[in-house]
Length: 332
Image (cartoon, rainbow, N blue to C red; front, side, top):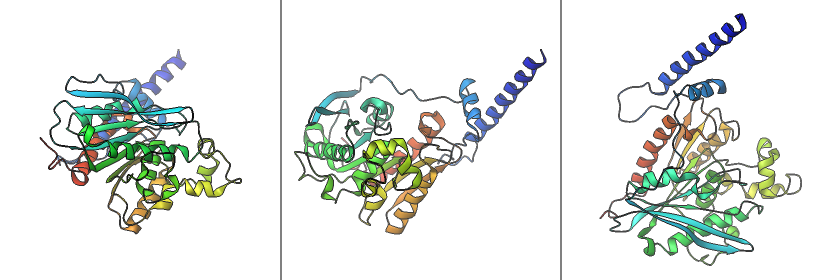
């Protein structure tokens, strides 16, 4: 009986701490700009907040509303036994060509699907953007995935008129491995090494903006080049081919003419260390590239599944897009 009372007290304390942390998440001044949502110092606190209903998650599989047109499984590339597709979401009333937001799913370069970002796709399509999401090869070693996503951007730009897209207003957005690929698209757009096996290699793959959600930027660190996911992605060990790890690192392609970048990363990310985002910020600043860095305290990997983080990210993403790929002259 005493043992049950003990654990009951522990659970009660956990709930109370969760309430306190939840309060921190929404504390702040009444300014228009939201304050960073405070995270959870320990994972058990986050789990307790979720278990008690105090921390809500976003709905990752919402229904497509009637005012959005969904065009599924458009083939943009066939290579070997892989048929690669993309989905496009359009506002029902299109009017003039609009900016396009291209989302790239994560999954450690080994899994995931293009529908994973449906929540974001529909949210921004309802704001008037054209949104797209792309598949890429998951079982073929580097540089296959990089070649694929760059080809997808070229395909979308080449078919811009057909889908009411402004080809001069393209943003790429991704989380984790998708963040890495988004940065590879943006920073290596002037590097011909990845311009193969695409029917539209003469079309530019350069976006006008990048959003990086907790993506790895330097695969040459000891942690990165010894991690199973990285080794699988490269297809060779560091000892066998260190140059491949350097070639697969977005940070090595940054030059002053690269697109503005918005980064979100949690300090308790146990998969992609926060130091990766810190290094990116330092390199972008040194190159003179306009960038924003939101370093969210006590949040783990895939933190934007949590509603308070998601709302925070959406607020700054919306303003980032308004600044760098504005709807001006694209509205009806």
